[in-house]
Length: 98
Ligand code: SF4
Image 1 (cartoon, rainbow, N blue to C red):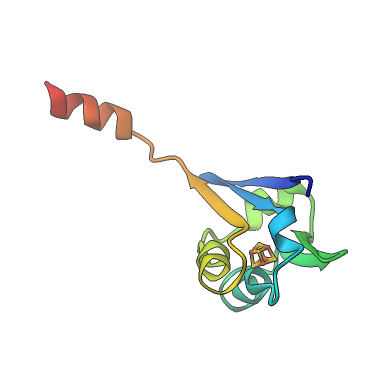
Image 2 (image 1 turned 90 degrees about the vertical axis):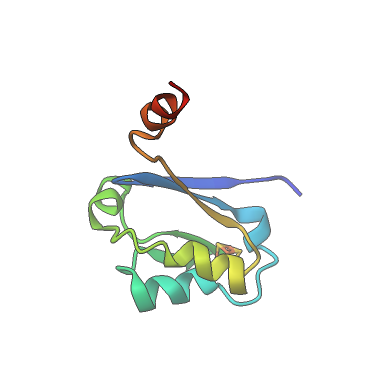
């Protein structure tokens, strides 16, 4: 199956959704998490989670609760991953070495 990764950014990170995994998902746990803890940024279109709004509004509106990833990993098909940059981590690590 061809991998199709859907991505969007929020203020401090990025969400990646592997739609090939969503095609085999039984419960769309990401949508449930977003409705319970987030701001309703995700909806299902043709069996795949996508943004309800444009990427600029998503960046502004995302509450960064991270619940979509937790629910996807726990109850879905592990298709959603969040990348969070830890600002200052490299500088912190370099100070530890000196
Ligand atoms: S819960 Fe995960 S695998 Fe299932 S539809 Fe959502 S992102 Fe895809």
